[in-house]
Length: 104
Image (cartoon, rainbow, N blue to C red; front, side):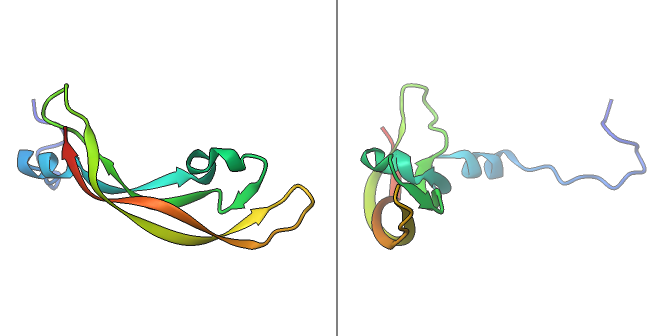
C-alpha cells in the first residue's frame, strides 16, 4: 500500500541519479575540531573550537575503495587562542582543504 492518504499532495521522490550524485565521493563542507588538526596545541582553547572546511566525503561504489583527496590547498584562518594565563591573542592558523577527491 502507498504511504499517506491518496488525496494528500504527493511528496517528490528523489531519483536514483540524484541520490547517487549527492552521495558520491566529493569535497563536502565539514566542521572540523581545531584540536584534531593541531593536537600539539591541546593546552590552549580556541574560539571558535571548530572550523568549516571542504573535506572529501561520500561513498565509493566499491567497499574496497576509500574517498581520498588528490588535490589540496591551504586556507589561513584567524582564530582566538586562549592561553592558560588568560591571554587571548588572535592567531592565524593554516588548515588543509580538499579540492578534488577520488575513490582509491
